[in-house]
Image (cartoon, rainbow, N blue to C red):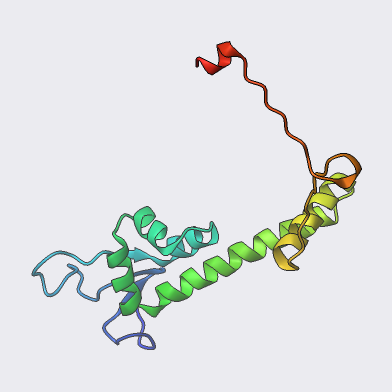
Length: 149
């Protein structure tokens, strides 16, 4: 374990990238419940997968309130979440770019449409019209047997 003095408080210790209180027994000098240990790498990994902060909390095994409390105590958690979200979006954008450049014209067209719809506000609409561009006529016939149902 190494002591880090340039973050939150000089009493904060970081083991790899797991943030926990400086007290080796956890908690406040042995009294009360141990503080939940947040694995910053897992936060970043789950965020990259698109999980919300609430979902990340449950995936880590704690409540959202606990994660938010640790986030206030350790800004590194908030930074890891933001970094993970950014990395996940970047990975998806790279993959979409590969699909747009695909040699299969159908895949390339679909990927281009997806990109344009999400980023450029484009949309496709299909208009249905009746004969000569007029309204569509709908006719419904119900038999006696169907009416009994």
